[in-house]
Amino acid sequence: MGAVHRFRGDVVRFAGPSAREAAAQLRIRAPAGAASARSRRRAGHARPLPGIRGQRRRPALEPADLRSRLRRHLRAPGAIRQRYVDDRAERHRHGELRVARKPVAARPQVRAARAARGPRGRAHLDPRARAASSRRGAGAVSAVNGRTVRIAAGQGFWGDWLEAPVRQVRGGPIDYLMMDYLAEVTMSILQKQKSRDPAAGYARDFVPLMERILPDVVERGIKITSNAGGVNPRGCAEAVLAVARKLRLPRPLRVGLVAGDDVLERLDDLIARGHSLSDMETGRPLSDIRDLVLSANAYLGMAPIVEALRGGADVVVTGRVTDTGLTLGPIFHEFGWSPEDWDKVAAGTVAGHIIECGAQASGGNLLKGWRSVRGLADPGFPIVEAAADGSFVVTKHPGTGGVVSVASVSEQLVYEMGDPRSYITPDGVADFTSIQLRQAGRDRVRVTGVRGGPRTPMLKVSIAYFWGYKAVGTLVYAWPEAYDKAKAADRVLRRRLADLGLEFDQILTEFVGVDATHGRLSGAPSPDLPEVQLRVGVRARERAPVERFTREIAPLVLTGPPSVTGFAGGRPAVEEIVAYWPALIDRREIEPYVRVDILDA
Image (cartoon, rainbow, N blue to C red; front, side):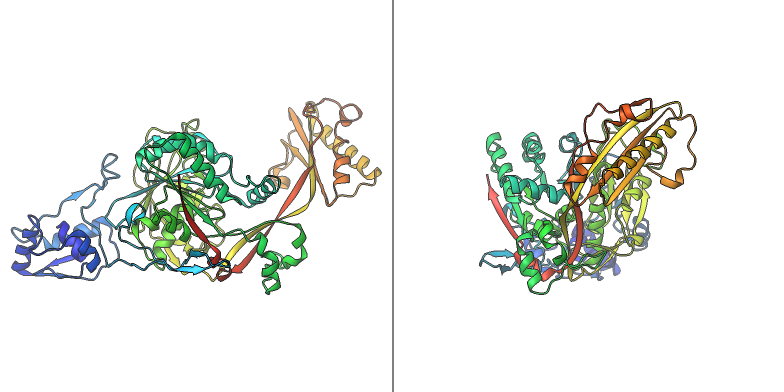
């Protein structure tokens, strides 16, 4: 039966006695003259088998439907009995039955990656190149062979739990470790660091983590995808290579470097050629604040990650690649999907979205049933077990804390969702209303039914610019009448600032313990609150008024209401404000500049 499925697809029919006899022979040996596995792949598995009439491949059926359909063909005496077994990933867990089949090895979608010439004549990634499904040395794309691909989340943001990637690598079998570091404000922070030190500009936490896990990663054959490169992916990649050489790994490490997302130096040229890069929310053209721009990065998708994996990269370091692309890239690479199979692209995108924030999908920050979540001192970060048909299971390593449930996955799905019918990424558009979730065992949620649509002609550009200055001061007032004391202190402070003639764009007062979170929805506070924190923030275009504000907090201790504490931290610091400017640009202005390099340790 395995041979039948390899040649003809998921669904077969046995036509008459001769067909049953031929099928019975397949249990023992392959048909005479059968080609090798490699030649069968090259031939597209098109040769018919004697006496067996195959059908076109149909959409994947649920196990119950497959069992029912096959039983109708297997009732005759002597017919082959189809066995049902667990798939490898679930065999040791809870015994969910599936049809034991080899997946369709359809005609490989092979197209050589073509090089587009960039502005300096270098060969760059052509994003239209389709995934090859034939082996090409160390960087080969895996054939669709029915196995489950396991992608583990290691970091959900810059500053996430440092033990998570170590435990993901050592806690059980995984194929890929995804580490997401970037947010909109992160890019501007990294750009400022790079302006002070050309060797900076990437997530520095990433390199020490590589030193801890690379020996295990190499030993276990795990690959890593990460956008830790920030605005200096080359510097990050070279730092990883230096660590690899220091560790004297049993084999040379290959690092894939993805660049081309940074458009800061191209802004003037783009504006001159008619690209307004208008703010998506206000419509203002970028020229209004061009001199204040700190960073500008286009969101890339999974294409350069796939190219790096094809090139044999063990670690892929990128700049501003989408969070979802870090997971979709490995899945696409392993299964050789067509980049225009929109449902599968959407499924991989949803998988990436679910695990992009780390433990938020596995019990952390869980609203529903949070009291019942156990073991958050040792949370298991989420893992996606992806199948070739686009379905996947969200789980975590056994014995770790947290929980993977329909509730935990659902709460992560709505994070930054926007329009649920149109979740737009550079790779395609996912329809979140099509997603079906089912609890498939303890800490296992099966995700199916994801539908998608074509990619848009535009890419999003994340632009950060300097806005001005801010400072925040706090004091704590104690019972009795804590809230009244805090309000009185706020009135005194505002009067003094006005008497000094200081002008601010905004003064914001919050009473922590009363209304800082819910504002007017908080209702009337209890008159017996044990304590209330007064928190006052100001912002202005110029530094001088903000600086003077910071000198007016401490005097309230002895010249304001009584029972005050919490001032030992000293004078508040003045901080620069970095504002966000989202824009769109034609993807044809970005993709020819995307470059993938493979570096060897």
